[in-house]
Image (cartoon, rainbow, N blue to C red):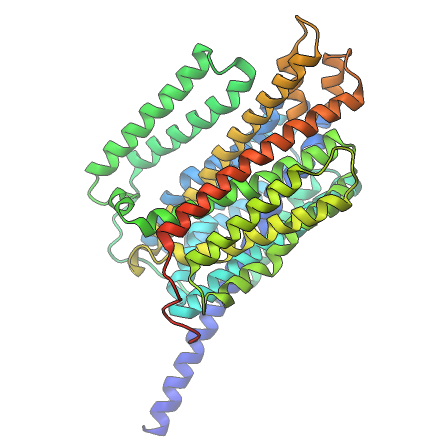
Length: 512
C-alpha cells in the first residue's frame, strides 16, 4: 500500500476513534446525573416531607413525576434524535436537566417540586435517548458492546455513590444540595464532552408519532395514578376503577394508533420475536429485584429504623457498589458465555439475595444485611451490564434512536409501575397486620400509608395504642413478605430470559 495512503487512512481512523471516545465521555458524564438525582431524592424524601409537608401520596410523586415523564417521552425523544440530530437533542436535554436542577434548589412548595421533577424527567429522556443513539452510531461490533457496558458501569457509579453523597448533602447542606450536584455534572458534560461529539441523523426519519406519544403517556400516567391512589381510596372504589379503566382504554388507543401509523414509534411486530421479548424482560426484572430497593430501603432505614442519612447511605453501598465492577465483568464474560445465560444466572443470584434478606431477623444491626444486599447487587449487575448492548441489536442500525427509546421506555416505565405496585403491596401488607393489632374504628389505612412512606412518628400518632417496638416488628414482617414476592417475580423473569435468550456457548468464543 502507498505509504501516504496508509498514513492518511491511519489518521482518519484516529480521528474517528477520538470522536467516538468524545461521544462516550459526554454520554457517561451525563449518565451520572440520572441515578444521582433518582436515588438521592429517595434518601431525601423524609427531609423533604419535614420541610415542605405533604401526604404520603403527594410525596410519592417526587419520584413518580420524574419517572413518568422520563419513561413516557423516551421513544419520542429517540425519534427526535434520529430526525434533528443526536448531538443536538442530547445537548438540549443535558442543558435543560441542569437548569431544572438549579430551579429545584429554590422551590417553595411540594407542588412546584413535583412539577419541576416532571420537567426534569423530560430533559433526562432527551439526554438518554440522544446519548444512547449517538453511542450506537459512533461504535460498531464488540466496541459498541464495550461502550454500552461502560455506560452501564457509569450508571452503577451513580447508584453506588448516590445514596452516600445524598446522605452527606442532606445532613450538611440540606436536601436541596442534591440538585446542585446534578447541575454541576450537567455543566461538566456540556463543557467537556459535547464539544467533542459529532452530529449524526437518520436520513429516513419522518417525525415524531405524536398521537402514539400522547396515548402512551396518558395510559402510563393513568395506570400509575390508579395504582398509587388505590392504597388511599381502596382498590374497590369507583375512582380507582375509573383511573385503571381509563388507562386500559388509553393503552388500547395506543395500540390502534401504532398499528395504523406509517412509521410508528413502537413497531409492535417486533413482539413476535422471542429475543426481542426477552430483552424487554431484563429491565423489568431488575426493577423488582434492584431498583425498587433503591427507593424503599432508604425510606425504611431512615424513616422507620432511625438511621442517619449518612449511615443509611453507607449501608446502601452494599447494594449498589457491585454496579461499579459487575457490568464491565459481564461484558468481559460475554466473550465466552451468552448474554442470555449470564443474565438468567444474575437474576437467580438476585432472587437468592432477596430471600436471604427476607430471613434477616428484625432488630439486627447493619452487619447481617450487608451480605444479602451484596448478593442482590452482584446478581442484578450481570444483566445490567449486558442489556443496554442487547437493546440496540433488535432493530437496524439506522433506527438506533427507536431501539434506545423502546428499551429505555420499558426500563423507566417499568420502574415507575413497579414502584407503584410494590408500595401498594407493602401498604396492603401493613394494613393487614395493623388490623390485627388495632382497635375497631381506628384509622388503620392512614397509619399503613404513613408507615409505608417512612413516617413512623405520624403512624404512632394515628394509632397510639400500639407500642413503638411493635410498629417496627410489624413493618419488618410486612417487608419480609414483600421481599419474598419480589423473589418469585425475579425467578419467573429468569426463566423467561433463559428460554428466550439462550444461545448455548457464545458464538464468538473468546474472540475479540
